[in-house]
Amino acid sequence: MGAMAFLFRRNPEDPARADASRRVAALVREIVGLDEDDAVTVSEIACGDPACGGAETVVLLMRAGRKTEAVKLMMPMAQVAEEHVRREFSGR
Image 1 (spheres, one colour):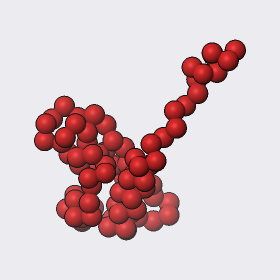
Image 2: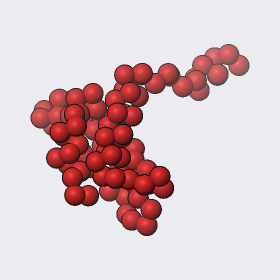
Image 3: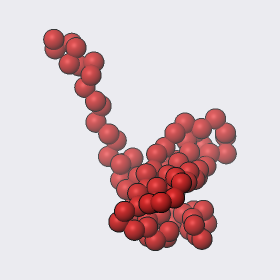
Image 4: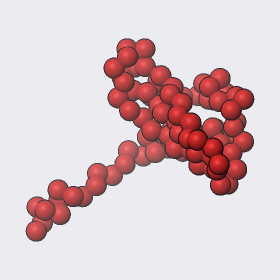
């Protein structure tokens, strides 16, 4: 039973990645002007393009009454700065 429990135990999330995700989500929320009913998720995925440094950041905007929008930033979450978010999200 102990070995079975080990197989299903989740690995703790990397605190730096979680902090980066919250930071980017807060920037998007502020720049886009999302309401409380709207949601934003930020994920980092492996990227095969050398320009993105091995990882890219994917942001999903989920606004009430609208289709979900996906925006890719060709860099790891930790490298995403306010100017990147402003460039990609201004006017959305």
